[in-house]
Image (tube, rainbow, N blue to C red; front, side, top):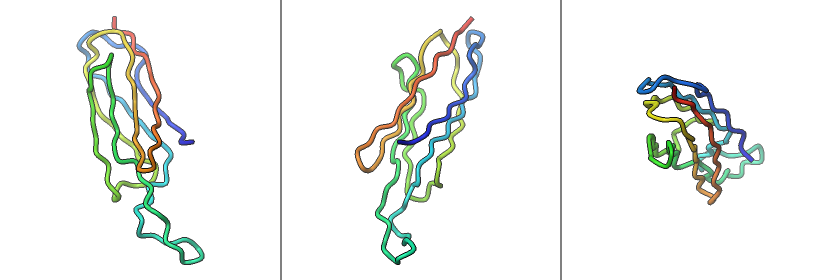
Length: 106
């Protein structure tokens, strides 16, 4: 199971631009490296990262094998209304990692 860390302000003024930071622990193996026995480590990467705000997509990233281990993303969005942000990472092996955060808009 991946460890997810998300930093988002708990409150914001209406129409304020807020910074969101995410980090997910993941090996991001590109399929070209070998282990201690010389065996190729199979490709295992997160390929998509999507963020929705009250069901509306506000951020989308396609990740590639060159992405580093434990991908760290920083982006901004506008606080339009109190609601929930859902963060979703899709893995090559079919796994889906997700977490949510709530922001209160005053």
